[in-house]
Each structure stands twice: as C-alpha cells, then as structure tokens.
Amino acid sequence: MSGRKHILLINPWIYDFTAYDFWLRPLGLLYIASIIRKYTNFQVSYIDCLDRYHPLLLKKMKVKQDGRGPYPKEEVLKPLILKDVPRKYSRYGIPIPLFLHELKKIPSPDLVLLTCTMTYWYPGVQLVVELVRKKFGRVPIILGGVYATLMPQHAQSATGVDIVVQGAGERKIFPVLKEVFGDKHLPDIQFGFLEDIPWPAFDFLRNKRDLPLLTSRGCPFKCSFCASPLLYENFEQRRPSSVLAEVEYFYSQFLTQNFAFYDDALLLNKEFHLIPFLQEVIRKKLALAFHTPNGLHIREIDFELASLFKRANFQSLYLSQESFEERILEKASNKVSAKDLEKALDNLRRAGYNCHDINVYLMVGLPEQNISGIKDSILRVRSLGAKPRLAYFSPVPGTLEWLVMIKKKIIPEDTDPLLHNKLAFPYLWGSFSDKDFESLKNLLN
Image (cartoon, rainbow, N blue to C red; front, side, top):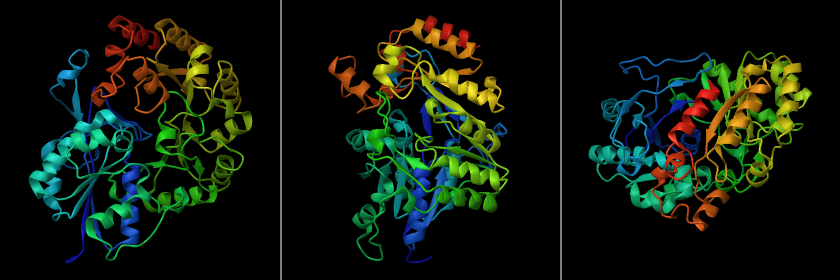
C-alpha cells in the first residue's frame, strides 16, 4: 500500500425537519469511486454518514420489504433563522462517535471527496469538514453534487472545503485530481456520456439488497420548479442492453432484489428505451422488484406499458400529476393535463394494479397556489381511487420560480439556503397557516 495515494469519499449527514430513506443513495459519489478505482491505482475508502445498516448502531432500524425505512436521528438545536418553523430539527444518520470510529479505521487520506444534494443540507458538510480537519489536518477536501452545482459561491464560503466542483462529476474528476496531485500516473480520459461511466461502486454499501438504477440523465421538460435542466444540459439515455446487463450483474453479485429508478424522465422514448428493457426482464423471468420514486410522466402510461409494468413487477409506482388546476399546470408543468391521470389509472387498473397502491404526487406551496386548489386536487386523486402524496415546494436557485420570486422581491437573492427547506418555506414565505397544514394532513388521512 506504500506510495499509493489514498482518497476518502464521504456521504454527509442530513440536517432537516424530516428525512426518510426513500431508496436514497449517493449515486454520483459511487460513480466517482468506480471511476477512480478503474482508471488509477489510488486506494479508495468510503464512509456513509447515512448508513442505516451499520453493525454498531445501538438501535436496529426498521426496514420495509422494499428497502425503505427511517434513519437514525438526534434532535439538535434549531438554527436561529428557522426559529419560526414549528417543527423539531434533527441530524439524521449515524451518531458522531460512530463516524469518528470509522475515521480511526482508515489510513490518513491524501484527498477527501464529499457530496451534498439539497442546498439546505449543507450543515452536514460543515460538520464532516470540521471533524475531518480535526483528525487529518489540512487534507484537501473537494465538494460536488447538486448543492455545489447550484450554489458554488455559497458552498465555497460556507463549508470550509478547498475546491467546489460544478456539474457532472465524471467530467471533472480527472482535471481536479491533476490539480491536486499533478499529471503523474493520471489518465487523460473524457467521459462524454452516461453510457461511458463504469457502474457504481455499490460494493461499498452494507445494504446491497436495494439499489438505485440510472438509465437516463436530464429532462427535456422545463418545469418551473425543477432543477434538472440546470444540472444536466442535455437529455441522454443509456442502451437498454446496458441497463439490463447492470441489473443482472448486481443481482448475480449481491442478490439485489429492489431497484429504484433515479431517472427524471424514465418514460421518454419508451419504445426504444424502457419497453425493450422490460420485455427482456419478463423474457428472462428475473425475480426482481422495481420502484419509481422520482415520479413518472402520466401521459406515457398506455395499456401496453401498464401491462409491462405489471409483468416486470413494478411494485411502487409514483405518478407526477402536481396539480389539477389548469392555470398552475400551464405555468409550472406542461408535461401533464388535468385529464391525463384518469386515463393512466384506468390502464393500470386494467393491467391488474389496485389503484389504492398507486401514488400520485401533488405540489404544495407553489407561488400562486392556494389551499383550496390543493384540497380539490387531493379529493380528485382520492375519487379516482389512487393515493395522493404531497410534494412540498422548495425554491431551487436558478429555476424559473426562483427567478420570478427574486424579481418580485418575495425572497432576497442571498437568502441562506436553510430557508430553501421544503418544510420551512411555506411557513416563512408562503400563504399557509398551521391550520392549513393540519387540514391537508386530515384530508390525506
């Protein structure tokens, strides 16, 4: 091991009012781990602060059959800026002593790579940086991910990292490594497409029974509240044969049972992308279960696709309706109309699904949205026999909603990202009261 550079990858804690393992894995970080291991001789270590399966956890965490479940958590002092939000604030993930235990087990790293998804989760990055610095001194620390891409200046000034990487990590990792270590022994490789990247280093995960699956990246739709077009300029899809090979490999290696699609636009070009994949899963009689937490484009769900879903064992279906108010849909999400859901649910019902098991996302807290419209949408979903799921609006920097709100001076441009929190925002900037939220919960129940 002497002479080899050692790179430590860390998935930080979540600081939030609520957090739940909804098949959540640091996929980008695990892709980077795979790239480094394949194309360099560097030693790679990994610590997951969100590891619900750590053997030294004092309390065994509950796990649903499909892999979802709660994180360990510890209530912490609520930041002063969030004092008016009437909810408890917690750090989600393994206890700090357990993280320090993991740090002691590894050799001193020459470089640390971090990721962060939500902009308002940056306190987790701050804590990791603080603890890593105490243990290893001035080791270079690099931050990538959604937060770094959307708010690079804030990430640079607030977290204590040395380098902030914007955009797709596979296209930046070797230039960054050369910046830190020099050109010696580093390949001159450019990854142009998702298809070119080696499969994620899932062997680092303790739980490999439930894994994410990315078959495409980006989204051609430009919903006013969504950051996908900001994160990935172009929409690209992998070959169905490549996706199938990945699924079969991880099933054979780890006996993975559940695969959760991370795609933002899984059903686009379905005749050439998803349908051939489903047909092969069915033909090969793969005993797997599939889940779609990111939400599906409802217009694409015809009877043929619904039947393939059922035969391929798509167990958890989440549909993106957002709203039934035409004025909201026209402004915020033109990928769906108020009439599409009924057709999709009818096709799913005919294919053998119980619509009570079908989840339908509805937005809450969009600018210009009112409580009565949300209630009507909930009742509409329930009248069709499906299960309404509330998706709380968060003002994502760079999106159309964000730009309009800045222009109207609803929020200042330099707002602390903590105020982007999807549960804080409606209380602090929206028009909803505590009673409004309670009425929505009561309606759901």
